Structure formats: structure tokens, C-alpha cells
Length: 81
Image (cartoon, rainbow, N blue to C red; front, top):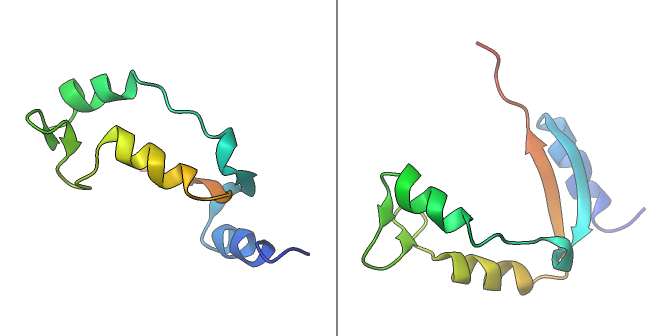
């Protein structure tokens, strides 16, 4: 058991599926994601190219992820209506 196993268990208890620890270097960022923000979100600030809700740019988010060695990756279960 690793130190991170408890976080995987916690995610699973919260109904997160496919919870696992992955190397941060395995996360890839697609520059096209900015287009989805720019034309698909009302919170996008075109003057600063930042997310108004999170107040971070795509570049800042990439740097945050790269600052870690490992990341807890999971998929939230969507409620069925």
C-alpha cells in the first residue's frame, strides 16, 4: 500500500470512478481547449485569456500540474435525471 492509496479509497467512497494515481507528466494539455473556453463559456475573460471563475490561464494551470509529481485522477459519476 502506498501513501496515496488512502486518497484513491476516499475518491471511490465519494462515488468517483476510475480513481487512480498517475504521474503528472502523463497529463497532456491541448491548446484547442482555449477555444472551448473562449467561445463556449460565459466566464471567459477575453482581455486576459483567463477563466473568470478560476482566475487562471491555461498556461498557469499547466504550470500548476507540472509542479506535482503525482496526481489523483478520477471521473465523477454524473447524476441520472
